[in-house]
Image (cartoon, rainbow, N blue to C red; front, side, top):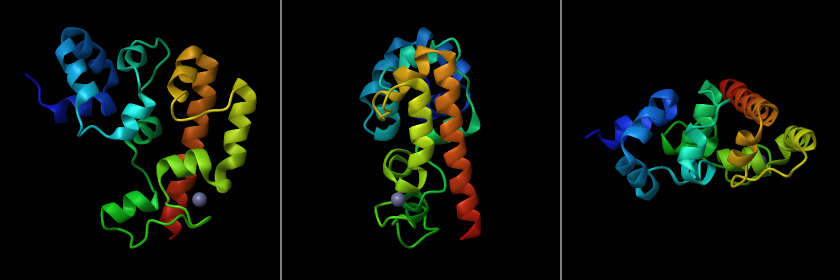
Length: 160
Ligand SMILES: [Zn+2]
């Protein structure tokens, strides 16, 4: 039996292997869905693991992987790992989490609006996965948005 850490590495790093793991072992899928230790954020985004791993145009990209694991150059994360004293957003005084930056912070509102205009729907953490699976165009638009914001935050982090 595999341990949950290895399973998570599959999920975040080698998603194609995960397809095999999921199909070979439904028991682990059940555990993934029920595992309290698995980041709540990941489960919010990937509400249906099987739909996600069987999506034909899905690709495991670096920034998407970061996005799914809730990591990146965000003050809340940097604060948690001891690299920053405050978790407050430099732009708007809210807690600087990945969700805040992607979905609520005025700093990146234009980026979000652009992708929403392209795919014709308001994106939320709970419908993002479905929109990405819906078509390759949607996938590319949403992936580009995630990538751009993650890169911008990384650059910002290096300047601090
Ligand atoms: Zn903000």
